[in-house]
Amino acid sequence: MNTHSAKPPQAISTDKRTGASKDDRQFVTALARGLEVLSSFRARDKALGNLDIAQRCKLPKSTVSRLTYTLTRLGYLTLDEDSGKYRLGTATLSLGSTVLARMDIRQIARPLMQELADVSKAMVSLCIRDRLSLIYVENCRSASALTLSLDVGSRIPIATTATGRAYLAVAGERERASIFEDLAALDELAWPALKNAINKALDDYRTLGVACSFGDWQPDVNAIAIGIDPGGGMPLMAINCGGPAFQLSPDFLLQEVRPRLIALARQLESLVTR
Image 1 (cartoon, helix red, strand yellow):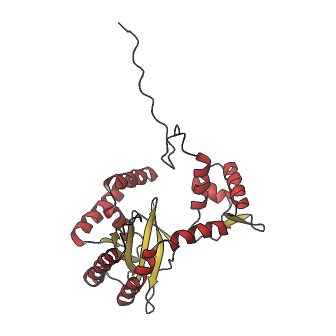
Image 2 (tube, helix red, strand yellow):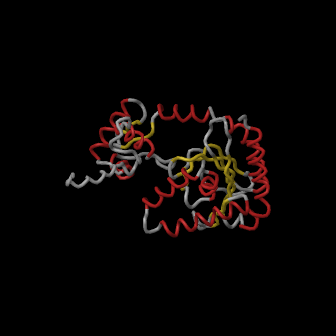
Image 3 (cartoon, one colour):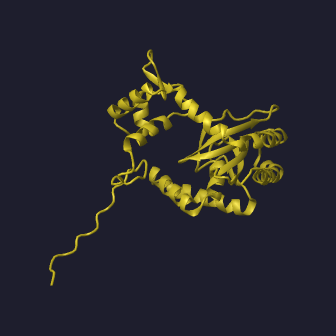
């Protein structure tokens, strides 16, 4: 009889930022860290220093210094000699322009979105997901009213915005569960209340056909949104209509804008080649 006790299985160590197993030989950590550096830049940022990037990426400053040096040599970052801070370089712009150019849905959606923006006197935006954010890839504003200071390339959070909640409503169960796990890890104390708010929004989506955020993201901003599946190998997207709360009441958005937004989404899905 074998008297030796069986060894317990070893836990798989993973990188909390990327979710990749540290034993995964196919995963290139240096590449992932370089992409994290590029992703740390936001539309509102004029420039970032190594310390700023290190704090956002949760990486040692010495590691970030080597990464920013390499990315600068390759043209993905440019260094301002006076401030010692970095801006996104032309190589990054080229990549972004290529991605946007391939999104034919933007050209199809723009006149439909502009029409809704004019009718609602609001801002209408088309977004795609990037981890725990939604990124604006198209944006239309009404010329006759105040709108939000967001534009193509801007990021908004997935958990508290109507756009993010609409995306969660159309995402698959596995993707949604993964996002929930990342949100919980981001702030364990705040997660229970946040999860309740998201689940309510998902219930609203099933009932109303749109997700709502009335002061949840910012206290003076109201919006509704709907998710779309453009097909053709393109990612899931979401379209929102929103603006200052004093200008767009929940009742106006739900009674007047909601049917138009739903019709826009259905028309867009029917026009895009699958």
